[in-house]
Image (tube, rainbow, N blue to C red; front, side, top):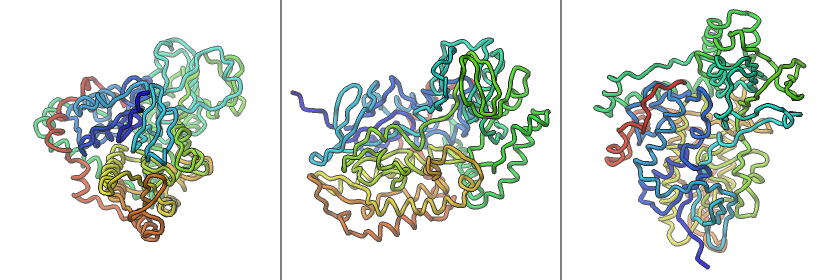
Length: 553
């Protein structure tokens, strides 16, 4: 029987996190790796979410890799099709195609202590890897609530992330459930087409205008001719958002002015005071993600739209019944009800050193060291792990910081020599998360008076990072071996991370690093916007594939 394939690194997922990890591995001189993708193409959430109006609420030049700038974004906020084209372009420019394995959903991964590797079962076969990088992302597995009677609904039912493009909505009675980031894009996109639209709103969102515009040909030409201008644009967008963080994390009361702006935005489109009252949140702005749209409120004011400001309780045939007893008839139901974020399904498939799944270890809440590694899961790293999310800026910044940590993690393994693995110390994990949760207490996400998807079933915020991206960049710049146990074949431990080695140092370092004060200094700005190297710059200042058509946000 042929020997099972073994690679140095297996990356799971080919969205921003997975492709970014693949690029970083090549930059580190590592070519013995695979990217396991469950679908048949790259793109992650930007492949899966193709609903009408789908776009990003972060400016294009900030929502892209610093090492792969795109001077030809057509609008200040990019649509789904252009972001997906950008990711396809990254896969081509950085020669990632040979490493991609499509239709290879990971079914189970088990830590092999004797061989110091992960045994991986996928839909396309088995393999093993010395290191696993999980980049499945928190917005990958749709969540549809359990609604009594839903299974017997005679019409069409689908989630926003699994849009059925073959189903014609023209003239139909359509119910949209949810008022999150997807729903506020879907409603204005389909409102002119449907016969009747009923929006089930459990909690109204705060909505600010989307200041979107076409990027002129002159601007794009300038960015192509002078790449520094693209970097400056990115740096300015980054700096503005860094300055906003204090209001979210330390002084939520300062957000009252922003609430007034949001109310003015609503009043311009919603003239009916009774409807405005139903659309006005009763929690502090920022507690849930602030949504951007200039078309959502005007769509709600149209005569073929009904707002049911109550959650969907049950379905009786084609009749939808709200929690307050109101009823609506529907031919189709679209769920914009989010994703499995604090209970990521991939965690159920990862079996660690003690024979427990990551989901079992995280049953009381997700915890990891610096958003990357969990105790008992050697050589396993998560991109966009616990407490790495952002409430006001670009997740690409956080991903790139975690890629720095990944690169140093692999360097440390090389320096250790021989067959070795790194396992996060429980004390370091707990110290890091204790400090994160202490800082979280005064943030708007915890004090704003809302219930959001940032919180897990126990009410803990295990999703958001309570600081600036600059802080996180510094905290993940390098791996501190004092925070890890060095594992050798058969479970033996040695080296600087052996039991008892600087355990208090690890605790102190985790606490101190998490509490660093943010400084938007020139070093960090340059680090965020610099290109990777000469080769990457030459290959990435071209357009992102077909990204040239108009974009909506």
